[in-house]
Length: 422
Image (cartoon, rainbow, N blue to C red; front, top):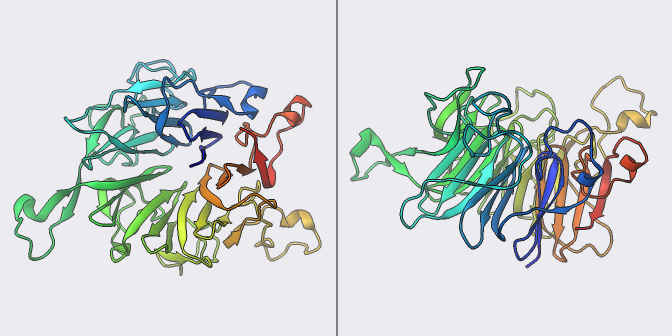
């Protein structure tokens, strides 16, 4: 068993094999309202969690962890209210309406539980969080303006009139009763339990009923499949109803699904190639759901804001999508513009990767065992415990030092994988 690196929006967390946490970048330990960058953000620092963590999740601007001994839920980072009340930054930390956006240390989130319940999984999007219980119940909190909480928020709004709930509440997932069922209650629907959860920027996903996928939240770009623009309760993604889903991850407006057989499906936005189907832009001929092809069965998927990562069972990471700051870690395709100068190498920098490409790691790196994607950076964990990072480093999220910052230069991007020392 080795440690694991998890990419947040502009930060990276590292969980050691015993559950100790470290953080690099903004929002990893707070620091969400900096007036200028701090060199200490560019290297990994210990997260002062009161106990070792059994689970950890890095969202775009905040973090969640479950204590190994206590089973308590902790949150920290950005995404609370600026001055108490219900004004300011949309909340995500579940610490009540009096929390302040001061970059505080980890605090306990009071999640109401039934007797015998414990936290099984955690996830979060840009401004919301979700917690899965061993009973299959899902508690959500944070912003709910696009339906990402999966429940109706009636009485709590911020100063802009948007629905928010800083306190965890439970969402209910309903499913139609199959033909022939003896259960005729609830007018043809039955409440179902979730087995796994995932999140996108404004979405929450649940895997239920032996691999059926449900989604709630923004659907303007069909990142929940067909249906209304926004979903305010969990609805089954019927476009993939014949697939047994094992994992789901969402980006800014695209979704990646891995089936139990190791197949990958994508839906939602594809403007930057993040769908991995060889197309870019607003392609009206693109099916709602498209397969993504790699040479082997997939083991894991990760979704950045506009790029995607697939881990193959061969220990190779494959990336595709936006590559403007090297977040795919592979050479870019030629530019999509038809009138560019083919001799101008600068024009070729940052062109999208339209289909999966294998990431080449330095010799001796070993096979990759875990992949994670942030807003515009990617982190890979190898079997030997090494961490390789690439992409944007403007907030120190790569954890590779602050030499450029200390020289008075702009932080550099890394277009090729580089080893980060923890």
